[in-house]
Length: 246
Length: 220
Image 1 (cartoon, rainbow over the protein chains, first blue to last red):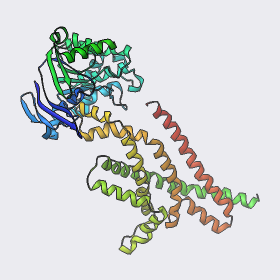
Image 2 (tube, one colour):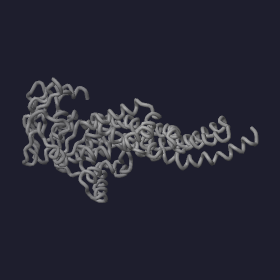
Image 3 (cartoon, chains in turn cyan, red):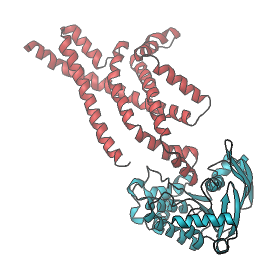
Image 4 (cartoon, rainbow over the protein chains, first blue to last red):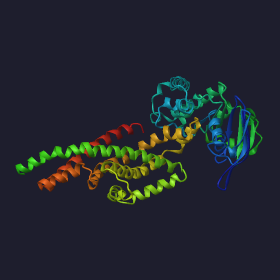
């Protein structure tokens, strides 16, 4: 469904992505792991054009694009097939939870307001927040805001949702409610690409693990292989370090 | 205070207040409304880095903020006729006050737009909104909320600055007062009287501002 090859990106003199290939099939849940600064987030942002990649190709639903020369029109069109969940939620502060969820339908896609609200409420129900529909973001906890953000990403019925460290900004006791929602989505067959530090989520929910190191993919493996039969010393050390921190 | 003076002051009160309501207030409201439109456009072309228009905005703000309001009034009303452009006093005042307030408000709004976190814009893109949709539905509503206190300030300044329009023969409150003074020779008490009416106008605005700010704060 979605495939990027040879993606490169530099910020000034620092090369952040040094030729990364990644392929996403329908129904995949891909967890991207790696230490800070390995380029995980940049990769995800380049895949949704929030950063402009310096080079690389992208194939989405059999259409090919050159990442460094994307037409604005194509970017908007492709983004409409995807959803994005940010580390800091980024809910629209001047909109209620329900308006956050429906704006992609009513404004971006010009859909009927009534129908959009129906969908919006359904999505809020899915993340367990229909009773918060008319609350503003500042009236919600971090975990609730992130669940609204997931509902917002879901509302437009995307083919894939990108998650950029969705639980990293949350208090430990709020992480569970967000992961639970994501687990539920995975079960329903939603295609997801998740940059995360949550090893348990990666182990139990993801089918594929991509481990990044220094702007490259060090290993791509099934989740079972990655966690139970790990042969790479660097990754073994990474897993040991994270588990010790827990 | 003599009976004569009290008579003059009570008699003049409505004579000052009527041009206040009929001229000062409309002059303020019309000028301020136009200035907001100018300010939002000037702030946006700068924020969006639109070539040429951005330079134009900088130039306009530079000229307006760097020259006295009174001089601007004179250039437009007394100066332009030399080029064959004759304006009535009231429209001339509207033009000058709109352009002047617009330049200051453009800076206020630009600062407020820049204070909207980048994440809001990225989130807008992520749900499929276009740049203009993000501006009108997400960024500007948030920015105007941030800019509300400085914009209220400039509205209050504008109420008082309209008194300068007396110099280009607009018969607003201050001009009306001057005329009464010329007849009665009671400058001290009459100018205090008009000052008090300005004070009442501004006090009302300040009250409205604090009520609005409380409502807006509830949303932050």
